[in-house]
Image 1: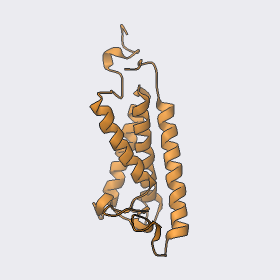
Image 2: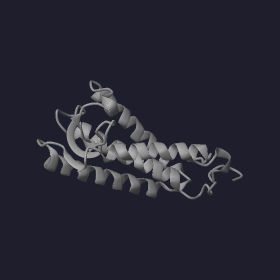
Image 3: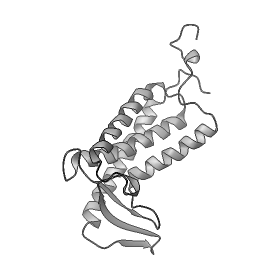
Length: 171
């Protein structure tokens, strides 16, 4: 375990900001280049660029629950902001940065895109066979989930235990 005095919140927020900006830029490009046209085949039918506006979550789950999904995203954002100052492992900072950037990317679509405030549809544009169409934010969230499985299996803690934190007496 790394010393509790080493904090990685700057790295977490940098990863989140970069993820968010890449997602925003690619969605802006998808809206201008892919809307109102047939799917663009990159690698045959294996990889296509297909523009859709998704009112729900992955696998078309929750298509009528855009407001609920927005509120859940807000809870995730607040939880990460609460934990961020206590992160003591760079890998967890990367994981939470990817998660935060991905959640912010899709959350901003729900806030600012049509049909309205907290009802907006998420822009999805990457299509693989037998998989729902997705975007960069979705990819970041999935990668974060994979990293969390690896870190948990390796028993790497995201925050220092209470008895090892420098703000505790006797530490």
